[in-house]
Image (cartoon, rainbow, N blue to C red):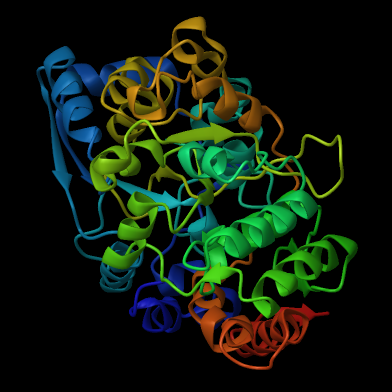
Length: 447
């Protein structure tokens, strides 16, 4: 989590938004079902008239999408701006909204952060454009994300991160270890690997909120319940216990590499076999190919291990969408670009440039599923990813202030990785801190 996260959420001023009304914080009151519908004729008229659409996004494939959109609609200019990645952009976006100046027409927002903008009415509800009729186009996890726990549609999904288990086949074969199908087998594999080579670990984990919530999601835990400003947080359900039971043993037995993800040491471990697996989103292959070049051919993808033998549950890890901030301009043009990029011809362009789809038609297509990955020894890994996407439960909710909650994960749950604190105790501490913060911000938060 980026260092700006705490400042970001305090800057959002949720108390202002909830108590004084969204307009006091820069939103507007004309969203939702009462908003005047925008027809396809309106959108076509806007495209014909032309104009400029400012898009804040860090996703690299959008550069070609923007160029193609401009070519198709010569009167339209797409001003693509990289205002920073995730929390950095969110800080800039919130500053612009607060100042009511310089707000982009389109903004990239990750699913876990969607609620904080949707609840405070800082995003346009796209049902007025007919976006709700596009639900069948997208896989359940991403579509659930853009609804942000409401009846609205606050963005169109751009990509997704159905999870898989990436494993080093060369290492597994060397030590005659079977690919685990359950997390209990995963624990056994961790023990066998570390016993065979004390320098090798099943995976690296020093505490990551996104990873932990994804595993909780897969385990059936539903710690967050959100109904407008009414919030409940509870990490004591059976799914949470399933997660902590296994992961606590990995920690206690020192079976996790004490290496932080995305560091040089992490990439080195993935490359030399001392980190043997990675449970992550389907967007990961491009990072293997670019950051772990020397291990090409060693790695494969497998379904995520299950908490119950024979189950097929999965979860999302990462992914983002394109939304229309309420204070943006040229809404018809902005929506036209978003629909083109995420539900139209732009999807094919993005896939050809390495993006992972959120669209069911592409996930199910023969061309997509039959794509061979040279890095994975020619494996058709998209078959694994597509099956995972279809098995993501669509009833997961994030907090309306998840960015802040994630920023304090290492101050609470993270202690379990470096001290005598247990994961269960850490989750309880995270829960209490999140409850306190939410109540301070004007929510009614219970346990």
